[in-house]
Length: 322
Image (cartoon, rainbow, N blue to C red; front, side):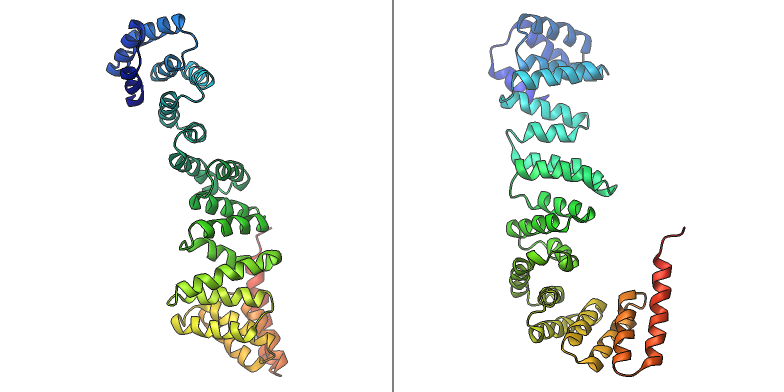
């Protein structure tokens, strides 16, 4: 409504239109309708009149007529900033956030980004990832270099197991907002699924680690990226040791240390690392699997059998009921 009065003061208005706006502001909807419909009859291609009518009809609970009037306003005045602002108000009030985004992006991209995210978030929360991707792909095209939208797109693609697309979105998020932690964390979960992206990801992880010398996860992520490429195991081991020195209770770090030590054929040390990981996360099935394998390698077959049994029970408990 504020937008409507802004352009009411800026343009020469006929008496019917002016009277209609005043009545609408005062809540006299019958008078507003009469005057605005008279103004429309005199100027049927004036988008300002149509958008005022959309507000009037909506307040009268004539939702179909309101939608038709809003659509008419948009078609008649696609580049009129004042009409677009009024349409944004209408679509926001009627909880049509995607339409609000599509209108707002024409005159205020940052605000449109908020509407796009608000339209996609309920879909993400409901795990309707395909529908969310449709909205978010449109959003990052129309509002480029927005970290929140890129991150949300990455999450939606991750939910669909479209890992390469997710990685691209997370990498773009880092390009825009390198201090944001979430894209690094998500990338760390899919390293095995994005072999072609690993050199770029490793670069980003290394830069993040260098910028955050007190962050245990930063060292661990860098190490995991190196290990995923079978690169520089000694460097990876050093990074993990640094991570553990900062956070000794992270089971993932001890597991990753065991994996790197396996690669170096240092099996007794790998066993010790996996044992510590199992103490910290006793319900992690992969840890028991790796322990069983390494116990066999060092000749502790009874211990290996015990770990295989634990692994089998955990896998069985994780299977959905039939």
